[in-house]
Image (tube, rainbow, N blue to C red; front, side, top):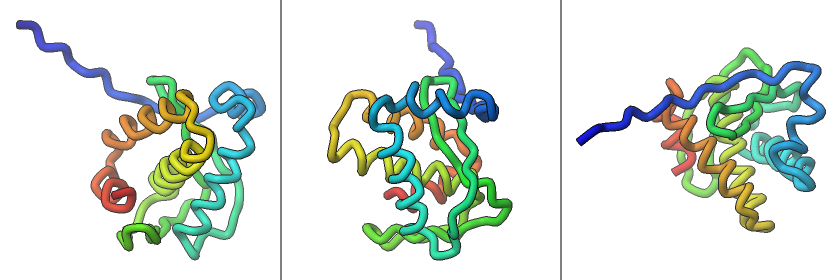
Length: 138
């Protein structure tokens, strides 16, 4: 019996030159819906979030996420579960994207959104802050 080693999911920051084509490539006509949902979710999760620039990241498994560029950490509180945790801006972006993609999927129910959720979740499971991410999205 041969065991296959799973390949770790990696992320790569999207360059300034490629930003304009990234959201349409991943979300098509729903690109603005997803982007706004991410920022809305972040505002709901953290009272410290005041807007700002977000970096885009593409994942080696086909996924995508965005994260605020703020150097600070955020305390996130899930209104649904009451779970709270402190995360880096990168991990906070992952949480916001997971919630937002799920929210948009609930309305539009496309296979692409479901795929993006699962691809990002696979990446999140390998993140250094997975335990806190999991606690908040639970």
